Image (cartoon, rainbow, N blue to C red; front, side, top):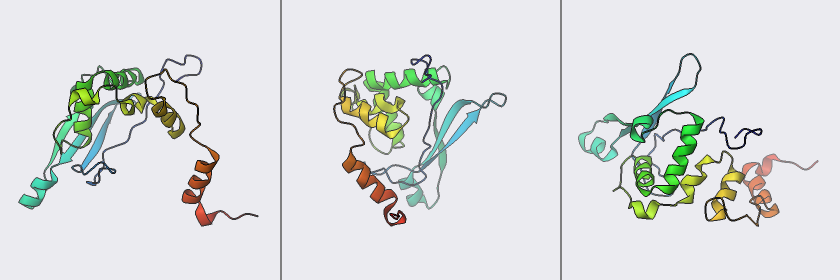
Length: 176
């Protein structure tokens, strides 16, 4: 968000699809990769395409078959990939269970049945996609509901900072 106009988004961040079938602790997913289309003059993203391979079929047929799973603009009926459109999309993910269920189904490369839309409505995970750094994301998630409950406990407590430094830096850090 822009400091002068805090409600106006000025950029986005994106994590591409994983070529592995590891689902991040939530089960497996089909391997995939992401291709970004950019406007040649302004170098801004205009669409994102996800290509996936059905791993079960590839193992049965002894041959991978990569197919376009979707293009983001068409799949989610976006007007463009502008920061404002993507911010609106995070609101849609939060408020519309159908959109959230479809997004989650695509996230796991359609490896499982599509989730129940009612169970996906008002999922803070999707609302908090608008946060670009870990502390802000955690603060958003800990509210428990969208923009209403203040956070009492900061994410980066001393215990957490010490643990994180040990994990990330460990024996590389030497006291002088």
